[in-house]
Image (cartoon, rainbow, N blue to C red):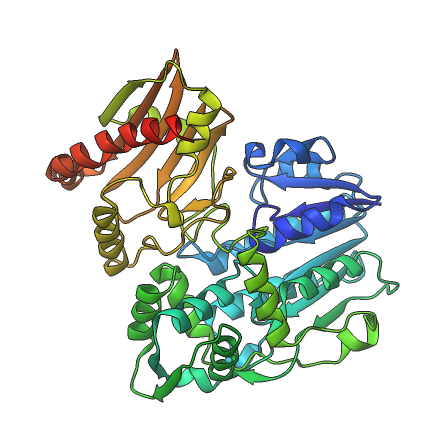
Length: 474
């Protein structure tokens, strides 16, 4: 069987990729930037460069494929509904043209009449992919709240209950949902490729019905915390979104879409999961939370909601052109004679998250708080692994743009800033070269850079020296 996986760098896609790689199938990936696929993976799978808006690349990737996974959505864009429709239509047309036998799509639970704009877009995508049953079969899996280490829902719940002993919440905390463990989602997706059924099928998946308030209380019990939640009907969507943005890792645009979706129930509408997948017994919400916490404690987080975009757009290769245009920069050069380059590399790759930024962490925290006030992600996202990085994942309010072992780390700034910024660590000719690049947007961008110069002088100079000092005692 030849299988195409799209969205391979996303939260679900990265986990499904690992699951499929362990099987005796021919796996092919369609990604925007092949550099985001780890080297060890490329030896076992085919990697095609392209996306669903480039029909030629899409058709090449689908040629000879039996089953195609569609794990794509465009939530980060303002016109995401139209983009989602066009993407789904392109994928359907190309799959039919290349004689693909089955499309497997992961969408969201919800009723079209009462769905939010975000959920409605997911439903519309499923309807498009299922619109030509005489030409291709579509297996449409619908999930609600996905619980797992690094998932959006789990991160929101965890941050709220860890930071707020008493919560005054919007009325949506009493909305019913049916959460499901991410491992169960992966099992449903996996079994779908081998399903002995020839017609279109919609499968709603989930565990027990719970309100969001019940979820937070159960999760707090698992964490050994006592929490009090008081719903108030007067909190608006906008105010709730800012509140969620301030206390959790999600940026405002993602928080707003989630809050809008929480006003309607996301519960199972059919029993197809038990009828066609009797071998899967969904874990309870409590079991899901315990497993997620265990993976975090053991540093075994496979993927995070912020992978390959962090809620601020897709990772592209064309950053190099903008990077070269940067007109303002701060550069530090320090000798590493007597220190192994791989130690220096490991040191600067440990930056961010719980390790902090070596010195002046209080300044970084202030910058993170300011970013939150303007709807950004702030420092709350942290990092997936305390030592290992990979292209496309987030480190606080940065994204890993490029990574060359024992030589280079390039970070792209995802904080709210009037322009575009990068932070590069480069090992060359027995030197550590640390450079902050800035491409300002108009006069405001230049004013921002020069106003920040005194702070930049402190943090960037001391950051480079700290990397050398820590490398000596690594």
